[in-house]
Length: 117
Image (cartoon, rainbow, N blue to C red; front, side, top):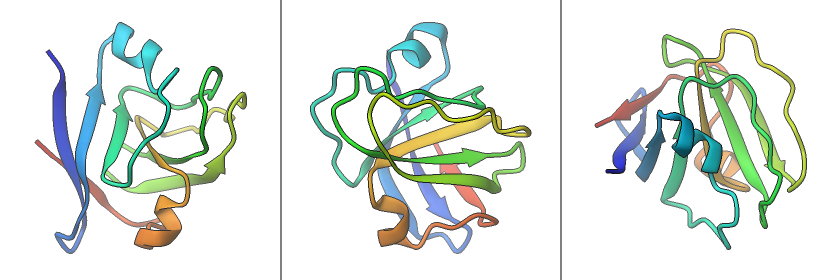
């Protein structure tokens, strides 16, 4: 059964309405591969995770790396298909969103991003 959550900034503003939690091998492996698109309220949260790839993907994504305290430690904006991120030390969670999401919602490194189940 799929688990979903919401994501909010530290001030409580909900920025993602439906975040699929990928916390087992199969869900992490499948990720967003072969999806045709992703809308701006949906995202994928992969945990544990410190690096991702975009092989077999059809669209750009923003990639948000988060540490154990919920602090954003790295953002990759508009990552193209068929790419691999470097390993991000201290990252325990990655949120994949629609490309351009972080700029639109003013998500930046150093911010706290809370997952609300």
